[in-house]
Picture 1 (cartoon, helix red, strand yellow):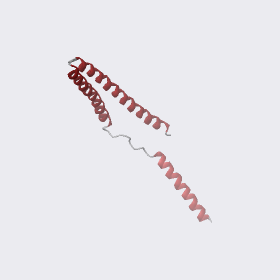
Picture 2 (cartoon, one colour):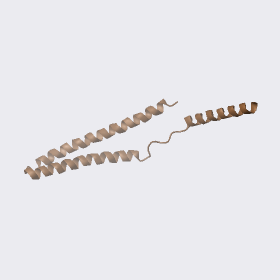
Picture 3 (cartoon, rainbow, N blue to C red):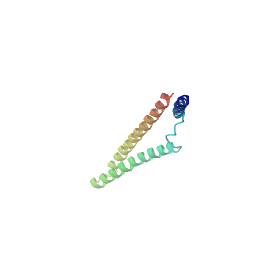
Picture 4 (spheres, rainbow, N blue to C red):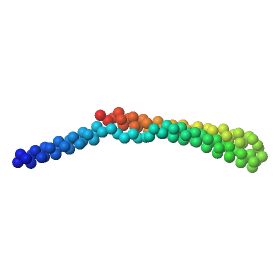
Length: 109
């Protein structure tokens, strides 16, 4: 009887040790070391895309209506504004992700 009781106690002890090791194990890093460079390039591309699309629309409308260069200038500024707005949205998204990671790290014992 004592032998069976000892085996049960050892099994329970082993399970508790595994649970503690699992809780104390370091978490894997969520992002690699290139994440900031990736974010910077993403924002640059968003800005340049806004400018390019604005230029294309403005140039096309100038050719169509013969108002050169007024619509092109107007749409370049609109494209710039759209690119900046998209960049800000990306920055807010990344900030929300980082805050969620920090909140998760602060809740762990």
